[in-house]
Image (cartoon, rainbow, N blue to C red; front, side):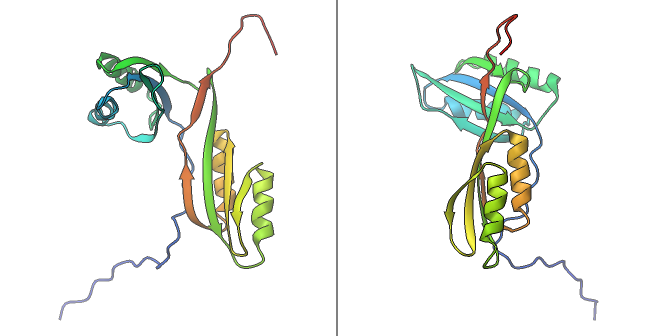
Length: 187
């Protein structure tokens, strides 16, 4: 009789896997004509060029345009430059802007739901307060934390909360806006 092969077993748990820290990528702001399929065409250009889309946020139409904020998982400036060229060739794309860290302000939003043994709510609240986060829902064994901060700070909050059982994690696309630059003026 052949020997039985052992397969690794995974613990039966409904918990979300421990979140990995966010690796910085590139953020593009793409203005497209507010027409059906314009967003699909932009996504297909990125897929054809084998870019891993980390987050994609699409704003409601304003003055006939939609603003798409896309975070792609690459720091390769050459590949990114090629992507921008391909996007600019699309008839749906009006403008593409690479929002670099040096030239923009960045914030990321996150909701994290954690569970813990009864009596440990104070520990979760203390972690949330240390990161200026807000407890939006809580009971004796579970709480949901919300934060909007710089991406590294959000990652640190998620890591601190991973000492508990993370049940749900929702992270939004990074919010970026270009810095105001005034020559010769210091704040």
